[in-house]
Image 1 (cartoon, rainbow, N blue to C red):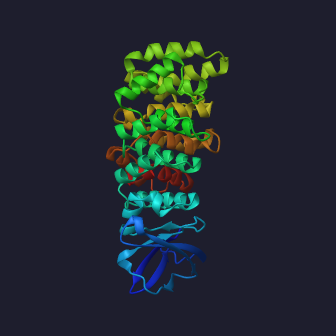
Image 2 (cartoon, rainbow, N blue to C red):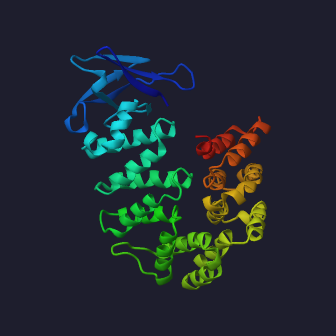
Length: 379
């Protein structure tokens, strides 16, 4: 996709695009540009302009505009295509005053997406972005913006960028307790299930699971309690047998019970059990029920056990071509994503890098799946 940026030259706003892969491509399109002017958030004045980008750059002349007092928000309506580079002044103001910048929900969502893209490219500090999301979640009312914010927080926590944040857990727990917009409670709680680490949160979730008693307005089904059982077993290894036996008893459907008994081995406290389970998955006949296997691989590479799980990465990569040969069309991507998503260490990145260097003729489609799944390891 194109990389699009804007900057002031005297009183001329220049919008530029470039092909990051240097292929000489250009993307003709109209881009909605919002200019916010003023020395502080309370007095910002906004105006929206359409810029037509045909080749590498477009020039728009404005009168009585000061670059020192202007924030430039590219693609304010969210309709254009590309990675929109935000300047540092705009980033600073947006992180501090997102709701002032973008009162219309669609504009607020577009700016949120742009900020996240700039975070992924290293232009926005991850912790500052997370704090902004947490702060805005306390007052945000739009379900789509809430779910998007939670998804970003969940991704950052999963990849170790804000792991173990007490502030994050308290925010998600507060949203899960608060009856509100459709799906917001569940989205917050399910995000919390994948990220919680604080002892107080662990005890609260354990109480909910044990008593099967949810918060007011939060509808939880059997699959939610099963997910709680898996996550609690990782965090409370001393209670693994109790959790396994209790949840297995609760599940009445024979197929779902078989699924649980198949997957729960991946959260066993004994390293030997998990190692043996992983080795068994290198045999094609043991991978027949692929959605179950994907869950097993994900739990074997759980973020809280990633140090012990680095040793699984190389064999999983070596098996990928066989996974493609014997499995469903989507299984190779699911296999490698489940292997890598719980890792964020330099050691994990090095394993992937070495594998690809040692296999220069690796099939392009599979190589791209590896690179896509490992993207967070190199950011």
